Picture 1 (cartoon, rainbow, N blue to C red):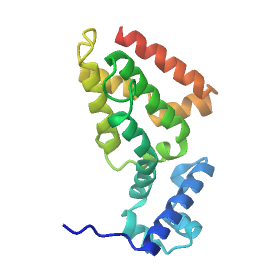
Picture 2: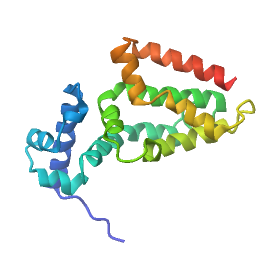
Picture 3: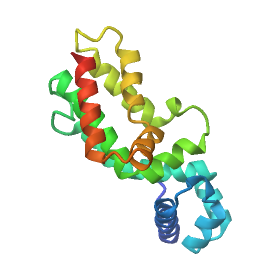
Length: 191
């Protein structure tokens, strides 16, 4: 099987688009207001380039989130405990929730834009499916959690970007305080 390599100019355009989109979303107080025209102009490429590469605005945002989330995915799949495999289930569940929340805090503009974009249920997004499956499987190792599948959904709901944004931007809660609250809540739920 031949692996097709990306042309150098296409790779440069892709990076320019991702950097421009990232900067636009980071500066915007209204992620919904950022259009493909805005991103194309900021990246110095034609709008057609964006549509050919990413499909639509949601595809572009998803590509940004996926690029940023890849190191976390690697840590969860193959890193050392407690986040990676092999540790005690309770500590791994808490580490996973903290890592997801920390990602959302560090990437508020992108995760909020992705949730705002719609594009179907957020519970069917690739990264959510992975987090849910991983957390559910970890929770199955805890005898005090009667319904690991549902518990994983409930605990992950506490990391939704819209909730994180509300707590930080509206209520003025610091990121460290949000993390502390989630750790306390999850600890109580997990027994």
